[in-house]
Length: 213
Image (cartoon, rainbow, N blue to C red):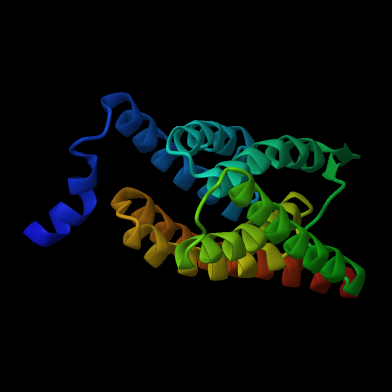
Protein backbone atom coordinates (compact mmCIF):
# COMPACT_ATOMS: atom_id res chain seq x y z
CA UNK A 1 0.00 0.00 0.00
CA UNK A 2 2.88 2.35 0.86
CA UNK A 3 4.43 1.70 -2.55
CA UNK A 4 1.22 2.78 -4.28
CA UNK A 5 1.04 5.91 -2.11
CA UNK A 6 4.67 6.74 -2.87
CA UNK A 7 4.12 6.23 -6.62
CA UNK A 8 1.33 8.79 -6.75
CA UNK A 9 2.66 11.36 -4.31
CA UNK A 10 6.45 11.07 -3.91
CA UNK A 11 7.20 13.18 -6.99
CA UNK A 12 5.01 15.98 -5.60
CA UNK A 13 6.98 16.41 -2.37
CA UNK A 14 9.26 19.05 -3.87
CA UNK A 15 6.68 20.40 -6.29
CA UNK A 16 5.46 23.98 -5.96
CA UNK A 17 2.04 24.07 -4.31
CA UNK A 18 0.42 26.10 -7.07
CA UNK A 19 1.53 23.54 -9.69
CA UNK A 20 0.03 20.68 -7.66
CA UNK A 21 -3.27 22.57 -7.33
CA UNK A 22 -3.32 23.37 -11.04
CA UNK A 23 -2.57 19.73 -11.96
CA UNK A 24 -5.42 18.55 -9.70
CA UNK A 25 -7.83 21.01 -11.35
CA UNK A 26 -6.72 19.88 -14.82
CA UNK A 27 -7.12 16.27 -13.68
CA UNK A 28 -10.81 16.66 -12.76
CA UNK A 29 -11.73 18.94 -15.66
CA UNK A 30 -9.98 16.58 -18.09
CA UNK A 31 -12.02 13.62 -16.87
CA UNK A 32 -15.22 15.68 -16.94
CA UNK A 33 -14.55 16.70 -20.55
CA UNK A 34 -14.23 13.07 -21.69
CA UNK A 35 -17.48 12.21 -19.89
CA UNK A 36 -19.20 15.04 -21.77
CA UNK A 37 -17.64 13.84 -25.06
CA UNK A 38 -18.98 10.34 -24.42
CA UNK A 39 -22.46 11.84 -24.02
CA UNK A 40 -22.01 13.97 -27.19
CA UNK A 41 -22.50 17.01 -24.98
CA UNK A 42 -21.03 20.28 -26.23
CA UNK A 43 -19.79 21.07 -22.71
CA UNK A 44 -16.86 18.83 -23.61
CA UNK A 45 -15.22 21.90 -25.14
CA UNK A 46 -15.49 24.66 -22.51
CA UNK A 47 -14.70 22.15 -19.77
CA UNK A 48 -11.85 20.69 -21.79
CA UNK A 49 -10.44 24.16 -22.44
CA UNK A 50 -9.92 24.66 -18.71
CA UNK A 51 -7.89 21.44 -18.53
CA UNK A 52 -5.82 22.06 -21.67
CA UNK A 53 -4.95 25.69 -20.92
CA UNK A 54 -3.77 24.74 -17.43
CA UNK A 55 -1.82 21.80 -18.83
CA UNK A 56 -0.12 24.05 -21.41
CA UNK A 57 1.17 26.19 -18.55
CA UNK A 58 2.35 23.19 -16.52
CA UNK A 59 4.21 21.56 -19.42
CA UNK A 60 5.73 24.89 -20.46
CA UNK A 61 6.95 25.34 -16.89
CA UNK A 62 8.48 21.84 -16.97
CA UNK A 63 9.96 22.48 -20.46
CA UNK A 64 8.11 19.53 -22.00
CA UNK A 65 7.65 21.12 -25.37
CA UNK A 66 6.01 18.21 -27.20
CA UNK A 67 3.33 17.78 -24.55
CA UNK A 68 2.90 21.54 -24.27
CA UNK A 69 2.46 21.91 -28.02
CA UNK A 70 -0.18 19.18 -28.12
CA UNK A 71 -2.23 20.77 -25.35
CA UNK A 72 -1.96 24.15 -27.04
CA UNK A 73 -3.36 22.50 -30.17
CA UNK A 74 -6.14 20.89 -28.08
CA UNK A 75 -7.08 24.37 -26.87
CA UNK A 76 -7.27 25.74 -30.41
CA UNK A 77 -9.11 22.67 -31.72
CA UNK A 78 -11.55 22.88 -28.79
CA UNK A 79 -12.63 26.30 -30.06
CA UNK A 80 -13.17 24.85 -33.53
CA UNK A 81 -15.01 21.81 -32.15
CA UNK A 82 -17.15 24.03 -29.93
CA UNK A 83 -18.20 26.06 -32.99
CA UNK A 84 -18.66 22.99 -35.21
CA UNK A 85 -20.79 21.07 -32.69
CA UNK A 86 -22.95 24.13 -31.99
CA UNK A 87 -24.01 24.58 -35.61
CA UNK A 88 -27.67 23.67 -36.15
CA UNK A 89 -30.27 23.67 -38.88
CA UNK A 90 -33.94 23.33 -37.98
CA UNK A 91 -32.86 22.72 -34.36
CA UNK A 92 -30.81 19.69 -35.43
CA UNK A 93 -27.00 19.44 -35.32
CA UNK A 94 -25.42 19.98 -38.73
CA UNK A 95 -22.55 17.66 -37.79
CA UNK A 96 -23.87 14.20 -36.80
CA UNK A 97 -21.83 11.23 -35.62
CA UNK A 98 -20.38 9.42 -38.63
CA UNK A 99 -17.52 7.21 -39.77
CA UNK A 100 -14.50 8.57 -41.61
CA UNK A 101 -14.46 8.37 -45.38
CA UNK A 102 -11.39 7.14 -47.26
CA UNK A 103 -10.45 10.76 -47.97
CA UNK A 104 -10.76 11.67 -44.27
CA UNK A 105 -8.62 8.69 -43.30
CA UNK A 106 -5.85 9.93 -45.61
CA UNK A 107 -6.19 13.44 -44.21
CA UNK A 108 -5.93 12.02 -40.70
CA UNK A 109 -2.85 9.96 -41.63
CA UNK A 110 -1.22 13.04 -43.16
CA UNK A 111 -1.94 15.05 -40.02
CA UNK A 112 -0.45 12.21 -37.97
CA UNK A 113 2.83 12.29 -39.95
CA UNK A 114 3.08 16.09 -39.99
CA UNK A 115 2.43 16.28 -36.25
CA UNK A 116 5.21 13.81 -35.50
CA UNK A 117 7.61 15.78 -37.71
CA UNK A 118 6.68 19.12 -36.13
CA UNK A 119 6.95 17.69 -32.60
CA UNK A 120 10.39 16.29 -33.42
CA UNK A 121 11.50 19.67 -34.76
CA UNK A 122 10.19 21.42 -31.63
CA UNK A 123 12.21 19.06 -29.43
CA UNK A 124 15.38 19.57 -31.49
CA UNK A 125 14.95 23.34 -31.65
CA UNK A 126 14.94 23.47 -27.85
CA UNK A 127 18.11 21.38 -27.65
CA UNK A 128 16.38 18.39 -26.09
CA UNK A 129 18.32 15.14 -26.12
CA UNK A 130 15.67 12.85 -27.57
CA UNK A 131 15.48 9.48 -25.81
CA UNK A 132 13.09 6.55 -26.15
CA UNK A 133 10.37 8.19 -24.03
CA UNK A 134 10.52 11.29 -26.24
CA UNK A 135 10.07 9.22 -29.39
CA UNK A 136 7.04 7.58 -27.78
CA UNK A 137 5.77 11.06 -26.93
CA UNK A 138 6.27 12.12 -30.56
CA UNK A 139 4.27 9.10 -31.75
CA UNK A 140 1.39 9.65 -29.30
CA UNK A 141 1.35 13.35 -30.20
CA UNK A 142 0.48 12.35 -33.76
CA UNK A 143 -2.30 10.07 -32.52
CA UNK A 144 -3.75 12.66 -30.14
CA UNK A 145 -3.57 15.40 -32.79
CA UNK A 146 -5.55 13.32 -35.28
CA UNK A 147 -7.99 12.07 -32.63
CA UNK A 148 -8.84 15.63 -31.64
CA UNK A 149 -9.55 16.60 -35.24
CA UNK A 150 -11.75 13.51 -35.73
CA UNK A 151 -13.64 14.30 -32.53
CA UNK A 152 -14.24 17.91 -33.57
CA UNK A 153 -15.91 16.49 -36.69
CA UNK A 154 -17.76 13.76 -34.74
CA UNK A 155 -16.01 10.84 -36.38
CA UNK A 156 -16.43 7.53 -34.55
CA UNK A 157 -12.79 6.64 -35.15
CA UNK A 158 -11.65 9.40 -32.80
CA UNK A 159 -12.30 7.02 -29.90
CA UNK A 160 -10.10 4.30 -31.40
CA UNK A 161 -7.17 6.71 -31.61
CA UNK A 162 -7.79 7.99 -28.06
CA UNK A 163 -7.81 4.43 -26.72
CA UNK A 164 -4.53 3.47 -28.42
CA UNK A 165 -2.78 6.72 -27.44
CA UNK A 166 -4.09 6.59 -23.85
CA UNK A 167 -2.88 3.01 -23.39
CA UNK A 168 0.60 4.05 -24.51
CA UNK A 169 0.58 7.18 -22.35
CA UNK A 170 -0.29 5.36 -19.09
CA UNK A 171 3.09 3.59 -18.72
CA UNK A 172 4.93 6.55 -20.29
CA UNK A 173 3.73 8.95 -17.60
CA UNK A 174 4.25 6.31 -14.92
CA UNK A 175 7.86 5.97 -16.11
CA UNK A 176 8.28 9.73 -15.84
CA UNK A 177 6.95 9.62 -12.29
CA UNK A 178 3.68 11.43 -12.95
CA UNK A 179 1.35 9.25 -10.93
CA UNK A 180 -1.65 11.57 -11.10
CA UNK A 181 -1.42 11.97 -14.87
CA UNK A 182 -0.88 8.23 -15.35
CA UNK A 183 -4.04 7.55 -13.35
CA UNK A 184 -5.88 10.18 -15.38
CA UNK A 185 -5.03 8.43 -18.65
CA UNK A 186 -6.12 5.10 -17.21
CA UNK A 187 -9.50 6.69 -16.50
CA UNK A 188 -9.43 8.27 -19.97
CA UNK A 189 -8.97 4.80 -21.51
CA UNK A 190 -11.99 3.40 -19.71
CA UNK A 191 -14.10 6.41 -20.67
CA UNK A 192 -12.88 6.27 -24.29
CA UNK A 193 -13.99 2.64 -24.57
CA UNK A 194 -17.39 3.63 -23.17
CA UNK A 195 -17.44 6.60 -25.55
CA UNK A 196 -16.80 4.39 -28.56
CA UNK A 197 -19.61 2.03 -27.58
CA UNK A 198 -22.02 4.91 -26.91
CA UNK A 199 -21.26 6.69 -30.19
CA UNK A 200 -21.42 3.43 -32.18
CA UNK A 201 -24.82 2.66 -30.65
CA UNK A 202 -26.03 6.15 -31.56
CA UNK A 203 -24.66 5.82 -35.11
CA UNK A 204 -26.24 2.38 -35.62
CA UNK A 205 -29.59 3.71 -34.38
CA UNK A 206 -29.36 6.70 -36.70
CA UNK A 207 -28.51 4.51 -39.72
CA UNK A 208 -31.34 2.11 -38.89
CA UNK A 209 -33.78 5.02 -38.66
CA UNK A 210 -32.58 6.33 -42.04
CA UNK A 211 -33.06 2.93 -43.68
CA UNK A 212 -36.61 2.56 -42.40
CA UNK A 213 -37.70 6.02 -43.57
